[in-house]
Length: 270
Image 1 (cartoon, one colour):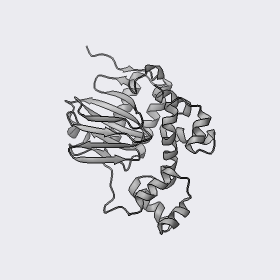
Image 2 (cartoon, rainbow, N blue to C red):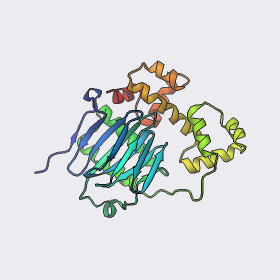
Image 3 (cartoon, helix red, strand yellow):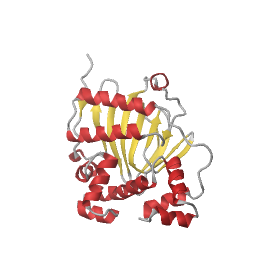
């Protein structure tokens, strides 16, 4: 007789940065917090791993090359694939689903071996992932409901996303860096780059998968992650991360993680 599915309570007292939150007969789920600057040497897993990068940054090396991620993304690591990871100054918050190596990703989900990371057309699975994390943290779902929502999330992950063709504009990297580091108005930034603000907004959204304002808000929240992981007071975190006030911090945290700042701090706090 197979074991019944189990939902594991998310509790900061658990300590480790990688917490299993659901165990089912055919899949399991975990929430992972990788501290700023954390490095994982080349390794492989004995199961398939499908990951949703909710917040933070990631650099991953595999036999296919190197991926650098600064926006939410979906990743697939087939069982046995060797890889190494580096996490940037913000760390990374990820929701992961583990499937047995015997599960045929190509046949069941249309995911081939070349599938690695995707950063476009992610709004539905991002919303599903944030909603699931929020519900898991609040203890609102029965095990059978978690199981169903994880399979629904997998189905959303498998939908093909369109990547833009051609080469990104040369100013894109500078634009990303400025939006991450400063609260510069888009019109002023466009003037510095020598292009029209409308063109900046359109091209940025096309290549980064989100509007400049969304990218900036996410960068603010990512600056807050290491401070939350240290257990700092929320009002201090809001000020240091560049939010207008604590209410602004709360709105952005809910939008981009599905959690309030207090719950996000509890999740990250070791």
